[in-house]
Length: 140
Picture 1 (spheres, rainbow, N blue to C red):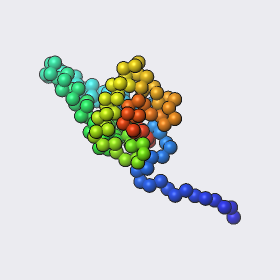
Picture 2: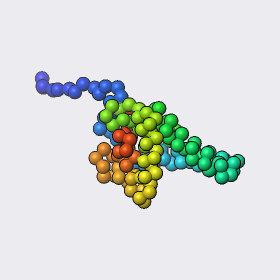
Picture 3: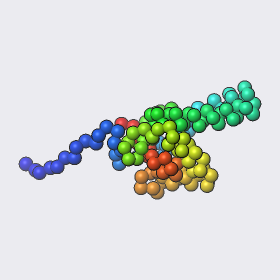
Picture 4: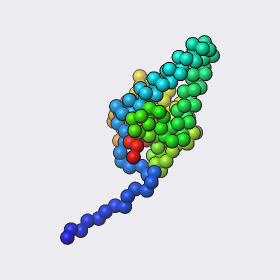
C-alpha cells in the first residue's frame, strides 16, 4: 500500500489554475463583435448619427450586464469560457464589468498591446483583466 495524500476538491466557484488561451478568447470576441456589429448597423441605418451613440451604449450595456452577471457574453458562452473574480472565482459584478469594458478601450489604444499582454502574463491576464481583478477560465 502506498502513502498518498489527496487534496480536497476546490470549493464551488473557486478559481483553478486553468486559464482560457488567446485563440479561444479571440473566437469569443469574433462572435460578440459580429453580434454587436449587426445590432450597430441596424441602429445606424434606422437612426443615423443617433444610432451610433445608441450602439455604443448597447455595447457598454451588453458587456457590463453579461460579464457582471454570469461572466459570459454570448460569444464566451459559445466557446465555453467565462470571466471570474481572480480571488473567489465568482461573478465580478456590474461595477467591475464596467471597469473591464473601459479597460478594453485602454487595451486597444496601444496597438492592442493590452490584449497581447496575456501571451506572457503568468495568469494570462489582459490589461482589462488586471484592472477588474478578473481572469478568464474554461467553463466547468
